[in-house]
Amino acid sequence: MPKTMHAAVVTAFGKPLELQECAVHLPGPGQILVKTEACGVCHTDLHAAKGDWPLKPTPPFIPGHEAIGIVVALGAGVTIVKEGDRVGVPWLYSACGHCEYCLSAWETVCAEAKFGGYTQNGGFAEYVLADPNYVAHIPKELNPAEAAPLICAGITTYKGIKETEARPGEWIAISGCGGLGHLAIQYAKVMGLHVCAVDIDDGKLAHATRLGADMVINARAQNPGEVLKKAIGGGAHGVLITAPSLPAFKQGIEMTRKRGTCALVGLPPGEFPTPLFDIVANCITIRGSFVGTRIDMAECLQFAAEGKVKADIELQPLASINTIFERLEHGDVPSRVVLDFTDTKSDKIADEARAAKPAVPVHA
Ligand code: NAD
Ligand code: ZN
Ligand code: ZN
Image 1 (cartoon, helix red, strand yellow):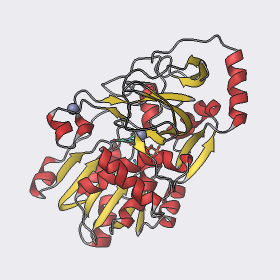
Image 2 (tube, rainbow, N blue to C red; image 1 turned 30 degrees about the vertical axis):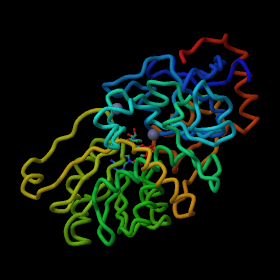
Image 3 (cartoon, rainbow, N blue to C red; image 1 turned 45 degrees about the vertical axis):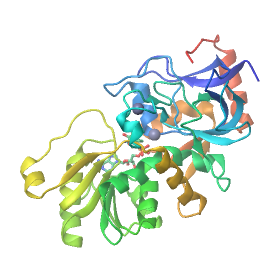
């Protein structure tokens, strides 16, 4: 095992990430060490690096919660995975396993939950420590880069669609057609729903149509609630808001059918106004939805293993992380960027960056 690794580190909120040489920590009891093959870049990583949310990570930390890799070392007592297994290290890094939420398969809201790339160092690194009880088990049909977006963007939208309680033959509106949204459209189609895709970018909407959306609305040019209600006679039975933008939330409620459910998934910092009369008089449910549980993970990966859902990915080296963040911030990533750790070119660039800076320790 090498003693050090390349990693992209948040050293202070709002600052560019630093490419550093960090220590590779051997797994302690109950832990495993994973050699990263690929890691998706989620908009959440950007929120993390900016310190956008009330619960903040502590710099220095390594973001990344869509890491896929091979188990290369086992800590004492680990039996559930073995060396050589391909696993994913997700946002739900670990939970207590015995609270009322863990016992009822709601481990995502466990008060002791730890978050990958947030409270724990994540996958923007050549090696990552993980809790074997919470890793994703990657089906053999999937390669690491195409599996990466599924373990956050995939599971989150698959679960979020279920949380809308929309049934086959009904309509779902999906607001935001980026990393999360492009997978949401595919899961919704496989689940037998009619899909209205909403974004502010015509390129994303053209892609949404290619992925099977039955109708699209550009929220910058038209009022999504009005257009949808006119087109289908009432709003959508389910609405899934993935857009990291506050105006999308008000529009989401306006797109919801009477007795329908609007599931909130996007996490821009802030609050949005809730039109009480409309929500009460139309018996609308507003529901938060946070990633998914381990059983949701297995289910969402299985759809992809069967070829029914496929992430659209752009491979990039770790060294381009700051350019990727800038593009993500400006809506310039078509679907999902995945960091490719099998790209030796990226090692060379990172080596050069490393040579220019002294090694700085990062907490485990
Ligand atoms: P992304 O940047 O890849 O995609 C966002 C999309 O929203 C883009 O296509 C953009 O054009 C579109 N958009 C922006 N403003 C819009 C508006 N007003 N109306 C409609 N569309 C709009 O981001 P992503 O990786 O898909 O993440 C999206 C959000 O979901 C982030 O806030 C992220 O933190 C959050 N997230 C939440 C969970 C969860 O568990 N709830 C999990 C993962 C990500
Ligand atoms: Zn994510
Ligand atoms: Zn718990």
